[in-house]
Image (cartoon, rainbow, N blue to C red; front, side):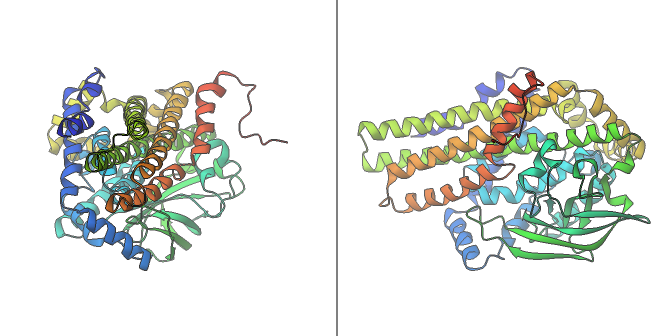
Length: 486
């Protein structure tokens, strides 16, 4: 069993095969994985079950103690750039953390993951002045034992997966209007299924200047959760991942000053530049977050496999069909681990963080004195000129073909790994049976949690269309996408 676990945890050969990555980065990934393991040594499975029960009784409950503990450990600033005051952890190191967190509890994993998805969108807009102010709040909270988490508010009542693809966004039925006014915008509308909005201190929000033309009028802004005009609706009665609550968020004439606008048409000289950066923005965010979801799905398969092995050893399961069940889940795990790693390499090496992947780029940001990064380079990055230059670089440094490749790999990683996770947990439940005691109930929870992985960040059906668009449809201008049957 010990030999089996060591092989299950061994990522070194697969990582070293990727010779283009700096050695220090590989060590950072493994260290993040160890951190994920250490976190769950302090959170017992019985405590996770109690959280599920508490949410079942009261959908507005959340594990405040765990969120504050994560904050005290510096987990909410650890992977933010040193230039804005963060810990400077490499974004790709999150692979190691997600793998181990996913193996323990997907809901608790999302208490950290959703925070960084929201901040990743701010970073992708190159609005480092805004990112710096948010980071300052996060670090202040970490020092005083509270928390200042961030939530991403994108999906709307009439636009869920539609918000997550440039072509579909053109047809989305959006309702969050950003009306230009003196010194900023007035925002009214609502968002639904917003992870961690119940306790977040900041929201990163999408809105539109023209509800009839959402793809041409996107506005992204940061706003404090206690701003006048913002209110929370019901907490969703979720199927799984109960530790990470999701709420409706209402906006009623909320004033957003220009300094809190991360992205808007008025920040660009040409429509063509705005539209191209808008598309890249959506693609970059979704590719990276979908790769992360695939990694969580891979991690949970590791735990499923462990449960099956434990049950097999305890009950002396020696029938051929039982061995085949375990072998199939092991196969699913190995396939998922391979694809999730490849997906991360593709998305990070070609995407917005690609300059951090080279040995030179990695060493510069890792070992350059923090005072220079924060007060020298950091000060420069907060300027409008730097913001515009970074956006121009993003437009010009990658072809549309490469961008489709990133998008395709994100969709592929998410859909394959989450489908494999669902298949694996169903096989495990067959093996364990309803008489499996605590193993059965843990698998039952995993089943509910995994189902959500198949749905958010775009349903797997949508992601398969994205795979077609990126790898097949891109080869022919005659192939039509999203055309409904007659």
